[in-house]
Amino acid sequence: MQIAMVQDKIVPFEDLAPVYLDRGTFFGDGVYEVLRSYDGHIFALEDHLKRFARSLNETNITGVDIDDIRTKVVEAFEKAKIDNAKIYFHITRGSGVRDHTSITNIKPNFFLTVTTLEDATEQKTNGIKVSTFPDWRWKRCDIKSLNLLANVLAKFDAQKKGCSEAILVNDNDQITEGSSSAFFAVIQSKLVTHPLGKDILPSITRKIVLEIARDTDLEVLEKTITPAQAKNADELFIAVTTRDIVPVVEFDGQMTGDGTPGKYTKQLMQKFAEMVKRF
Ligand code: PDD
Image (tube, rainbow, N blue to C red; front, top):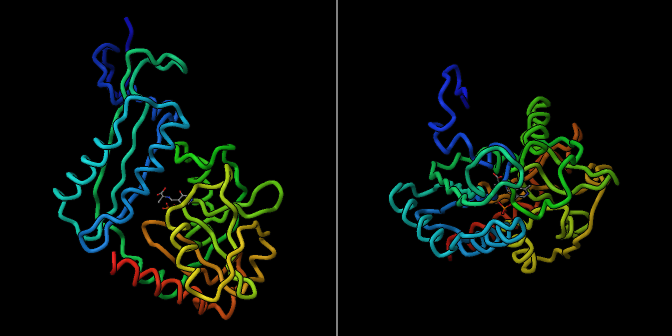
């Protein structure tokens, strides 16, 4: 008799609900997106759908209609009636017996939540502390995959050190990005961030920050920096959908600038807020 055990209950294998056989759980075999709304409007929906379509394509997950995903996201968001919402969704390749390549007759599983976005005012006003952690991730960090164990372990380490974000450092002593954010430094009036490629997620907030920076006197440099350079930077910040720009005021225990959010960071935050109002 083929059986399974769920918590402490034995059930015949044939009776298992498909959710227990999700390849997302077995293999992290799926891709996801996180969006937000500002004052009742979903922000950058098309950018997120485009990135999602790319993640599906790069992982050969087929049978997903992006127009259908758009409809689902909008429908759920309207139903939830949360003005400042966090919208999470993922697709896994499907459910089936745990076999790496056995995927005939399975169809993708979709899951979505709309929840209230955490208030980031305190972090945005006073800035956050960050600490470094080795970038243990795989070599396709441009795909927004459900495999987030390395990110989770990095974030736990930061939390243990009293920090809000882990900044990932690769084997060449270069900063790639945050465990769940893009990372920026301001060094001598230059805005520096890791170039796009397979080492980092093509962050949508990162893209917007670089667009906004064109309206400032900051020169943009897409190049890597080391933790030592970050420690001596004039300003640091992270960027992520859920919190847009958050100033960093301490890096590996060392104060950044004068320990308060920097002037360029504040300028970019201001421009971001204005752009959100217009949108
Ligand atoms: N994380 N880099 C990584 C590794 C991320 O996980 C994220 C977002 C970002 C920022 O991307 P964007 O600007 O498109 O949100 C960069 C999401 C929010 C998460 O995993 O919860």
